[in-house]
Image (cartoon, rainbow over all chains, first blue to last red; front, side, top):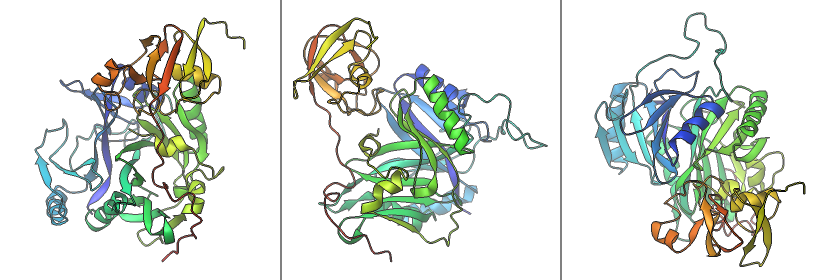
Length: 314
Length: 119
């Protein structure tokens, strides 16, 4: 079946102690592993693989790579051929290049960020297990995020020079990785410029998103919550923990998601995201947002610009 | 109002505006607390770089790490830093060096373009 879902994100942090405190006490993740290089691995309570987030010590913020999990090991051989046929160089990393993880394909997206594909990661189980499970465990802390849901990458877009790596990424994800386009933002004369795109490999509204920007980078890593009430409670947790909230609880027009945006202690943006507003079946017609309704797509209630949301990223 | 912490005056060179910043809080937090504007506000955690400033006069104390992607060691030597990561140790004057850029709607948001045709 190919790519199943996001597997993990690897983030650079400038203060490991503060970062671990944030991802455990605010998001509710658990540390599952540390390596000799000082990298810390974490997972959410409802995830079954060993980790979904890697924190690496650095002198700056940002993303090292994002990895997606394939169903079968043989998918990696198929994708290696298809990615190379698309004109992108692929390196193969042996099993163990990341602990508890099988072999990986490593390559650069058209927008420049590093992406990896893997098929094997150590199974450790969810906090509630698989036999007669309770709906939630008793040891939830903070927001109690269920899983790492998706990421949004800022992608170089310069209409004057004709560079649009949003569109380049969309072509790559559709043609090579078999994702489907779910929603998009079209701007410019006649709506000729695909300025943002939301794609899925599952039936969720998105598994990855791309937004045009002067330079490429990480906009956010998103964590799934069950309901609007969980989003409100997550904001309470953030207030208690003095987390810098970028956008207080609201709803997106795009994806219909209920959301909060906030920053980790190194300035990497996080989202808590609830409400799978619809199932993005592969034959669902693509939703398009036009330039004049762009901000309604982003923040549905106000429909007004929040410049920090589009201009601030790592 | 009702904030009796010792404060010093921080002046933004480009606008001539100034605000009282408490000792121990960041230059950016001091501005935010008063609902004032002048220094661009981003992640407030040292990572995004939009609150980059140059200290022209006075001295600061470091409150946390500053991303090397936005302030190089050389720039740091010239007085550049991020306003969210330093607090004032005395009255000071700064110049705003960071900026918000308009990303994907640059050059288009002001145009009265008709809505895109959905194919």
